[in-house]
Image (cartoon, rainbow, N blue to C red; front, side, top):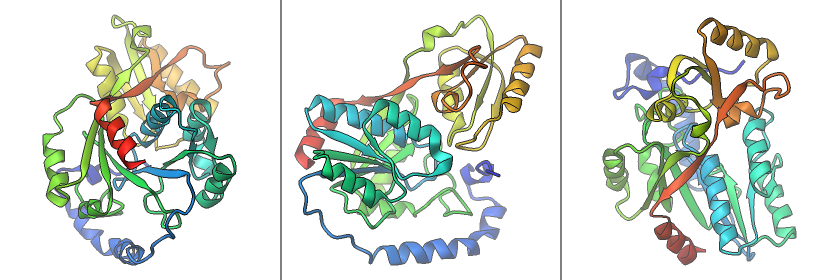
Length: 313
């Protein structure tokens, strides 16, 4: 059974429970310490490798940014592919990437990379994998969400961090993703630990928002890493939400569960909206009355990013 991310992970100040769980962070601390000494062999092939990952667990828009980067490199006439490590529970992101990019998805990232090399790809973009030291990346991006930022700042299970914030010193670039919020605090925090790191920003662009009637009421449901941003995107566009139902990230729905959501919506005289990531996992023939929000990432100052990519790649 999948569990929802604990709320105390994202408190601005660590809770007593976070401190109580601190001893359980020691295995991760030890693992991260030894990872520092594990250096992958340098790339000897022409294909350039880019990793879009995070150090905050889940909900940082890695997949939308991977798709956006794929589109940018295609426009620059690079033969481009994406790689995602195969996990049975990540079928949602795998389907989206397969629909929108040329995807190599295997249980081992190195095997997927070898397949891409055989096909003479110019650029390969990894969706996740910053902590995988079997791959040598030419360029790394660490993603943050501007609502959650670094949560309480503690490592798993005391908090939501895979690595301490000061570890950004070993990465090349930062992407702050989310709605159009003020990112000043997060940028200052990042620069505090790496004053020379490149920081880029993006925002969610709901490209099918006109399909929703602002005079109606809606029940929303999602099983994603950051449901707060999904809800915020809708409310910023004046969608009237009367009930929100949250499932664990990568949740696989049964039709019985979907029927329960439909019943709640019927009682509330409301329509239903979910995310594209969730919609791809439900039976469309039985649920064509459910709508989904489709978003794209819009890069703030995209020309700056393109120049940076040309310089580094």
